[in-house]
Amino acid sequence: MSLAALIALRNRLSNDTELTAYWTAQYNKPATHLIGYKKAPSANDFPSLCYVPVQSLSKLNRPGDTAVSLVVGVNEPGITDGVFDGIARLDEAVILILGALLPLRLNDDYVLGKEDVKIIHDLGSRHPFHELEMQLSIIRR
Image (cartoon, one colour):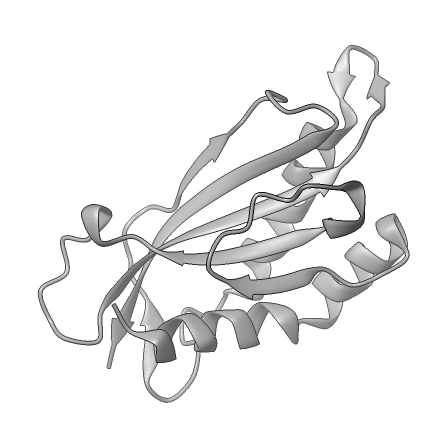
């Protein structure tokens, strides 16, 4: 695990103007960005992005390479046309997050791995709190 890799990813997403504008438009505040996972106890803790190193997912052998689970959370109590609003908001956020990560270079030291990003939804299991996990790898250059 490399803390520097997680910080590079966090800096990239926390400084993205489109993503910040999205959170502010939807929730009247920017997202909280935490390195480590915090199961949010209240609606005030959302929106959130948690950057979690995941050693078990890593097939990376070089020091400094890091497998990451990015956990994105929102608080959305509504349901529109039979779809949890939280799932719809997370879908919108994923598109913005992936856009913020292109090009794959995070900074002079780190790039995103070229493997497919895996996305796992909680599918509203904690409604009105909704989370998804994006699994990705960060490679030291």
